[in-house]
Length: 113
Length: 112
Image (cartoon, rainbow over all chains, first blue to last red; front, side, top):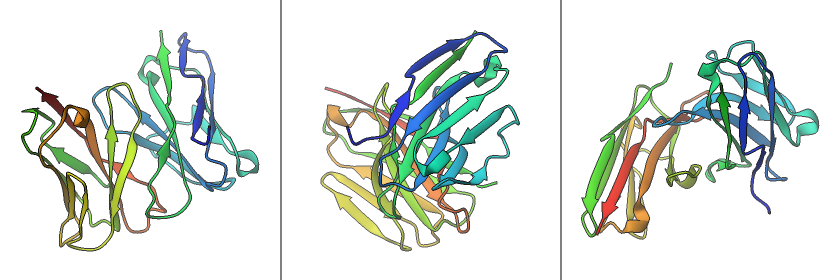
């Protein structure tokens, strides 16, 4: 499969627990993005990497959220001390050049109970 | 910050009717992209528009970028049931390092 892979597909966690999601982008894509989407809304930008450098992070992102992209390949998004408001679909996307758009993964659906 | 709005929020059409969704940005964009998200799926890239006044066609879909590069539209001619989904525009502002701001989306329902 040459698309963007995300793991896990679903995660149910209790409030206060930490969760980590993984994204494997298309191998030749040097740009990687994390977005969050809630029901009936458009994807909301969280953070962006070019290779291993995190170039931008949304001001909406609290310090409970951290993302890494070691070696410029796969990326992880960690949420510490989860809250019910963190329940959403977390989407990862990658891109190579302008004009071709983003390729999204199938997402990780997080439910905080 | 940059905001991107779409209207209508929802449209229900009979198969064969036309459909249009409109996208407006609070700021001038360097380019605009359109995505389609099927129910239960993830956004899929359709097209990118870069030039002021640009018009592009993909079979029954026509995309337009406004002269001021702040608005865009997607028109579908003779809708089919396979067109069902939510259509998002997404704008990249100047100096935003390729970060896309997605619109609020228009959900299209097509019935026979």
